[in-house]
Image 1 (cartoon, rainbow, N blue to C red):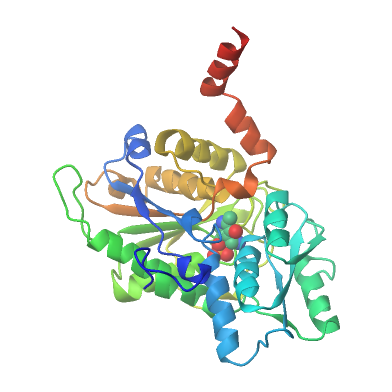
Image 2 (tube, rainbow, N blue to C red):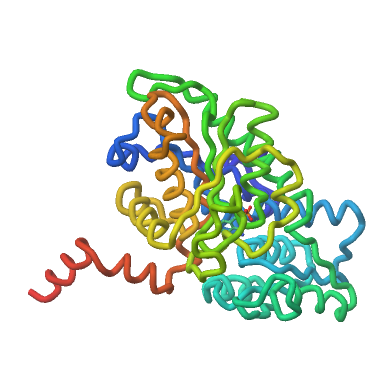
Length: 360
Ligand code: PMP
């Protein structure tokens, strides 16, 4: 495992190894007695949880002889973060990159991608996943047309969930297991609940597998899906608002990716979240915990808080020492110019105070 106290070979060694932090102030405000812990993925070198899979998919393809420096063109449909991880890895290793990305995804992600040397092709947000004009359809066409084109395919690639099973889960387990139980912070020493949003589902299913097979078979895993998406089970959960647009980026789909369903039984419960819940939770993370997270982190925390208030989660919520880990996938760098963020940042008490000071 790379350590920051040694010289690293490249930025690829600064992927992952992210901190697990107490969200005590939010827990207190919400009346929770359990430990609420946030896995802060924006501290990864490329800025998101998806760096982990990008690195693993590229290195696995290299081992299989599928990538040739100077010849191969890595093409990937993504909501942006996998693209940024791939562009980072490919900048270091010398492969060209083309990212196909729905229009809805932020300009900040496109700028980061282009800055890393990737080409970016935008696609209509409303295109069905299997339409030729969707980000997936366009990537497939480009692969057919471009010599050396290869899609690593995060929706099917085993290295997507595997990256989380082998890095994200062990990091969480190590942090929780090595933190002693004290009178101020009692702990079961185990991960009792894990909560994450689902896009490809690689994070939630991969971490779930790692936790359940190597650490705590009775760990409860809760997946979060935005209203408008169809990933949640039972499917009746998706009926209200199916197909309606939502602003949060990176989670939810109009098809169920392979990586999410490959190993049945890993996810115990699903929670649906709205943009409003997500942005309210982002604001709590900013103002109470001082962490500069992105929108889907708000979905994950909002989903966690809703689950902890539900019949299913209430006992955990009120049991001191229970460890509830929420995965916070990326940071505000990706959304700094987005209306939802600017409204949140520039309105409300502190900035009003600043404005009134400026007027005097
Ligand atoms: N949040 C953000 C910001 C993302 O980019 C992604 C990846 N699409 C996710 C959450 C979901 O991660 P996964 O694909 O592993 O389900």
